Amino acid sequence: MNDATPTAPRWSLVTVTFNSAKALREFWSDLDLSASLEWIVVDNASQDDSVEVAEQLGAKVIRLPENVGFGAANNRGFENSVGEYVAFVNPDVRVLPESLPTLEEAVERTQGIVSPQLLNADGSLQPNGRGYPFLAFKVLNRLQNNSSASGYRRFAEAGQEIDVAWFMGAAVAGRRDTLRDLGPWDEHFFVYYEDSDLGMRARARGIRRLVTGNVQWRHGWARDTKKPSFAAWRREIPSMVKFYARYPYLLSVMPERTAARLDREFAA
Image 1 (cartoon, rainbow, N blue to C red):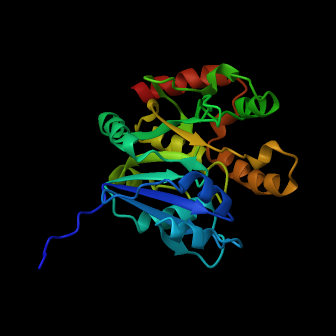
Image 2 (cartoon, one colour):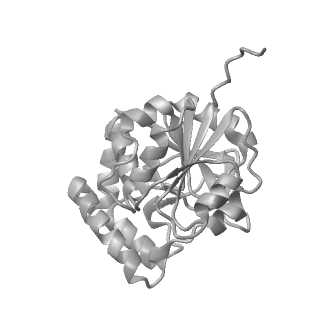
């Protein structure tokens, strides 16, 4: 008779799905779920076979009766996870479990929240690290897709780590206690801007935000608001209004000067 207590997973991966079956098949089919890793999928009332695919791939699936939004669903997954470290990972991100110890080392060393450097399908770097989300920078970034507006888009080359103001919510990792203290996700944002808000709340608490090029994961990154889509903009605009009402200084007409002041305040 074996009375050994099962070892709790060291890492929990939390993924929110909404009609994401195709992405799950493409990005998660090769995931090795070992004893030190659990994968929790929170399904926002998908109308495709996302739930069935996730279960077939070995995930613990939480079925929500309605779409509660990205942040709220992430929080449900967080509440049901047990790992000492938690990574929120989109369904179109390919996780490399062998890189989790490196990600863990960065989390421990910085005592912050950390994102791997995300890659496009061709291996090029995605700008998942970002500078302060001033409205002026975001507008310029949207109008000029390749713009590096005052360092707003930030990349971590292999072997490099960079401090950022925030990073895209496609891959966010940290210690459970750090994330719990942060919320982790503000459910006032149904979708969009919850990742910018997470970064700004972390900054207010003196928590570092880091992108590490020592860990690189592929990300599909199909952003709806880069296409002419009324439905996507209808979802984004309410979140944008809430965000800038909460952080009015990010409406500054002199963003570079304000950014320098914010950096000094954080360093202090």
